Length: 294
Image 1 (cartoon, rainbow, N blue to C red):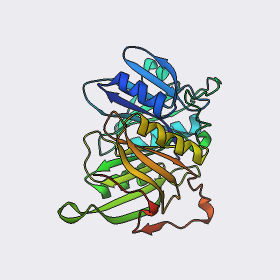
Image 2 (cartoon, one colour):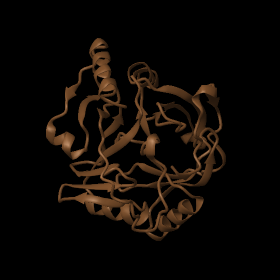
Image 3 (cartoon, rainbow, N blue to C red):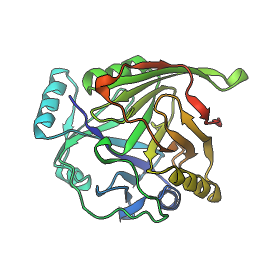
Image 4 (tube, helix red, strand yellow):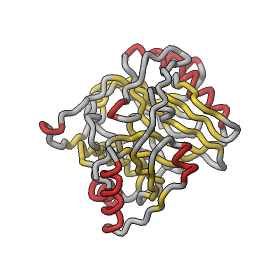
């Protein structure tokens, strides 16, 4: 199986209005559709990349992984059947909502709903950020990346590599926190069939939202700086200061979303040539900065 990219995410919330303000006024996303039950936001030529749904709790609802074409889609279904992975075929209403041709749905060991599909449509409407973001780095690399929480790192690593076909980019292990609150953090960084350094991260820690963070990459360093100013002006809690990561070279900061998980807002992520790459092991998450709170 060859997953092309992370195409979209769906988030459940009790704070639809707060998400509307945060997404447009701080992140600089463009609202593309809305109702009393959902909001859709676009960052490029796709009709949406992030969907926010009303619900009873704050959590990640689903992630959408894109396959190249129908042939790859049918092959993926065969592989899942052979591996005895239960999945269901998405109904027409859900496919229409997500602007896909065909889709199947199943869960990873964490409980994350996976949408696996082909045939995502374009609306060709120009992305215009309400706060002047010059653009987001998407295209064939997809929306960005997600870091998911797991208490069983090995099981989930095997699921994403042996079943979904991701490959390891980096394994990271380092100490987080100080004193009595210090703990050893272990993460797998996994890439799919595009140059983005990682599309999925697996972090050995619990999180009730089902999501550690979602990364959005912008086209300029100034876009990051302006977003940091907007976050501070809107009293959005910061999870970390500005910094550059050691493995994917991203210059970014982290802010806390209305859902409680973090948004990494970054620039200059490493686009890797996989034909000339050997997976790495890292013990330092940052080259500089990224002073984390909590």
